[in-house]
Length: 116
Image: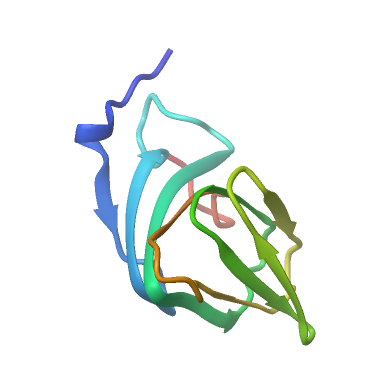
């Protein structure tokens, strides 16, 4: 078992994100997960990301607040404990349109060629 306490989670900068503070909960460690990494993203009001895509799928789970996910002009609001999978190559924009911080768990496979 590989344990990382929240106080030991390291911050990271996510490309094309704004008004966001990311913490790496698991991943990119020799004893950590081998297939994916897990981040905790905290989006301030008016924070978000995109539009962009990644060459691998990702999963979002909203833990607090709400996040608007926009794909092909369709807007979906995710609230507490709602989740979605964004397929590889799908262009998405996410926006925190509320006046509360949105806390979101993000699960993403390692990029091709990256091993922990």
